[in-house]
Length: 88
Ligand SMILES: Cc1cc2nc3c(=O)[nH]c(=O)nc-3n(C[C@H](O)[C@H](O)[C@H](O)COP(=O)(O)OP(=O)(O)OC[C@H]3O[C@@H](n4cnc5c(N)ncnc54)[C@H](O)[C@@H]3O)c2cc1C
Image (cartoon, rainbow, N blue to C red):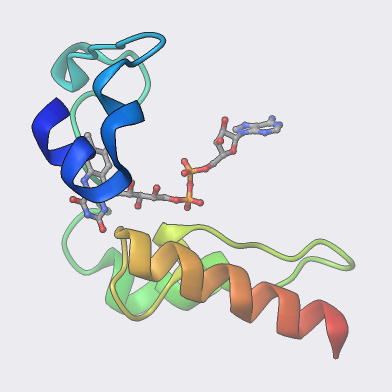
């Protein structure tokens, strides 16, 4: 892991300040990972409701994205979508 970080970020990455290990299978709220999944049919029927603004509140987050839902790519897309909504 450290070797890979050094390859990308240089020799300073060989001396981490701290290392955090997390067992995602025991995480209290997500109960696993790496993504939150709705039950069968829930996304196709109701998924768009997750991204609908409520008054002045706009929603972003990987689970609101219709593309790459549940991934980093989807998270960034959703942030851009919410920012566009607000600017509009
Ligand atoms: C173990 C694991 C492995 C993964 N691997 C991959 C991978 O290989 N590739 C990939 O594309 N995706 C991966 N993902 C998924 C990806 O990390 C997520 O989809 C993405 O980070 C979600 O981004 P987000 O901005 O929607 O939410 P988050 O990154 O969860 O951001 C939400 C933020 O809101 C904060 N927050 C929560 N409540 C409050 C509050 N009340 N007030 C203020 N702040 C609050 C949280 O602290 C958090 O910082 C992985 C996820 C996990 C857990």
